[in-house]
Length: 136
Picture 1 (tube, rainbow, N blue to C red):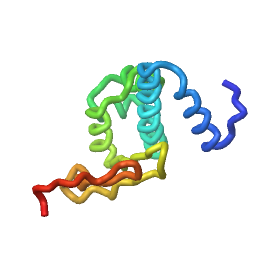
Picture 2 (cartoon, rainbow, N blue to C red):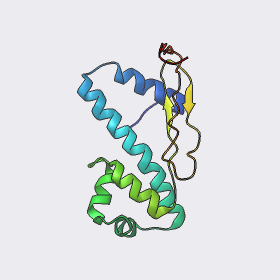
Picture 3 (cartoon, rainbow, N blue to C red):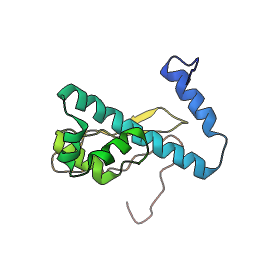
Picture 4 (cartoon, rainbow, N blue to C red):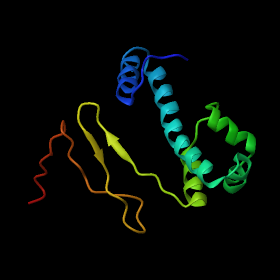
């Protein structure tokens, strides 16, 4: 694919424009592929840095080399269980960022030891706090 888009901002803008058209189902499918690619690009970087073969990676997470190849080719979508296995076996963790296309990126703080993440409520730019009369 030959594209005049050279920087991340131009690519993201073109991607967002492409999402404006098409059905919701198409948009969900595309977002699923993008999310999968984001996780797998990081795994691929770590795998190469550490000299881990895809076959070895498959053994580490208890799946077949064929399945790992299908994940990296985009034929299969990675699931949360596989991501958890990769985190455990590679000794890494993924940071979660929430980006609202109408606001700036909001990054969750790192999880505290023994916790899955921050469960504190956050107010986003377009969200108002709701008044609860039972709390004073």
